[in-house]
Image 1 (tube, one colour):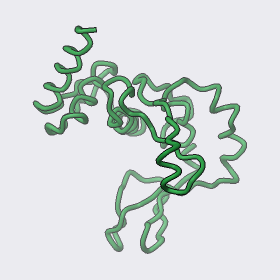
Image 2 (spheres, helix red, strand yellow):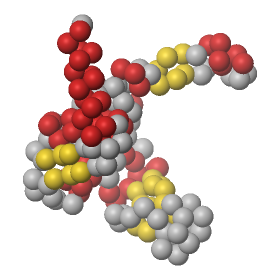
Image 3 (cartoon, helix red, strand yellow):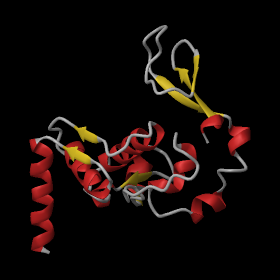
Length: 175
């Protein structure tokens, strides 16, 4: 899939190809992924998406990962909830909100971010048994710790992340 996208500067428009970078050296603006839509249209079809797993990896054709990548962290696939009254106030007919309160494995949208970032490092950079650390940022730290348990690497979230995991465990034990 890597040949079907590249990075483009949001401000100056300079193309950076498929590199591991996040900002433009020319103007220091963030880079965005741009896709060759004609090339991915036959690959990224509704049928192929629906045939994928019920997590974020069903969209892996759009991620900077090898074509045969099989995700191990079951993050994502959180439900959409229709917000009729809010939609009426905003004068829109079909407003949906993503319910991240049921997002697995740690009930945070950070699970998807961490899973995707670790996949890119481990599989794109071909790292072997890497270790990862993240400062104490609560949800992100907890997501990193859980991702480390599910993968073949060591992960250390900060104190807030460990505390949040303990709270999740306590809640699960009360059910």
